[in-house]
Image 1 (cartoon, rainbow, N blue to C red):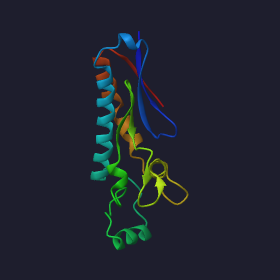
Image 2: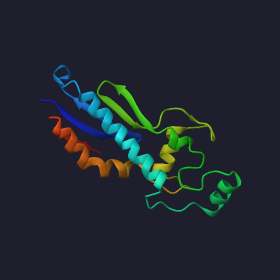
Image 3: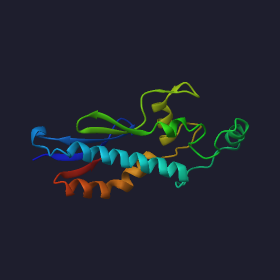
Image 4: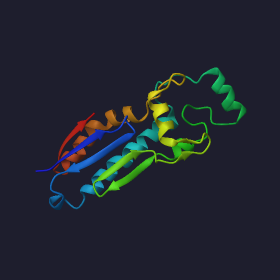
Length: 159
């Protein structure tokens, strides 16, 4: 028997799907199922950012003026689009995919993009939290479990 679970790792840097158990006995499409789930999650996150469908705290008057001055996108999480455009599903190994952002430098700020993710998702002392990955994961949970179960896997989602 083998199982499948989704685990929120390391301060919600993204979510990682793992297949556990007898790798030799896994169906050939098991890795594809994990990949599809991760890619679908990224698509949903990008869609929610593009549509501004979350109830995020509005931008501060200062930041709104600054974005206007720099001729940046005035929507939340979309100043330069660099952060949003680097969201993807990344293959960790045959049965493990990460839906999130890569460990690269955010060109406009010089910060690691994973730090930008953390600031946006959880907030800081000055920046309000604007969760965008966590809500998608929990909204997708029932559908993910159904897809995984239809492939013959036992599934559970772990925080």
